Image 1 (cartoon, helix red, strand yellow):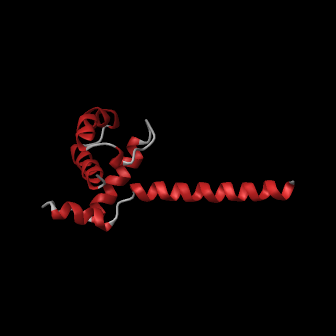
Image 2 (cartoon, helix red, strand yellow):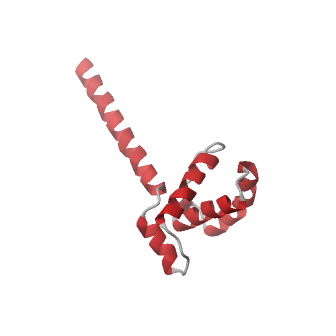
Image 3 (tube, helix red, strand yellow):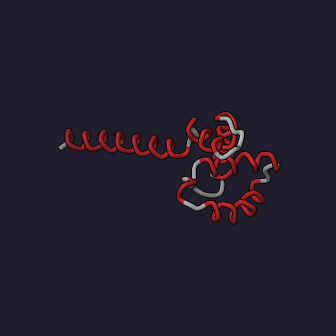
Length: 106
């Protein structure tokens, strides 16, 4: 009985690690995200997206679980950004970095 429980625990930990890494990969910016925005005429670097991502993680997760940006529409994000930004007290330039990051993931 103990051997089966040990295997179940190991399997549970393994599945949890895979799930966590899959979720974070949906959030982390990648080069393709920058290219997608560049193709629409914006000058965006991967470093810009990484900074926006870090701000998103550091400031938004304090109030709620982080959302995968693609779960919502651009219109939804535009509607919630003003209230969220009031709570975070980010500067206007930091707010823009978060927006660019989120839009890169839509």
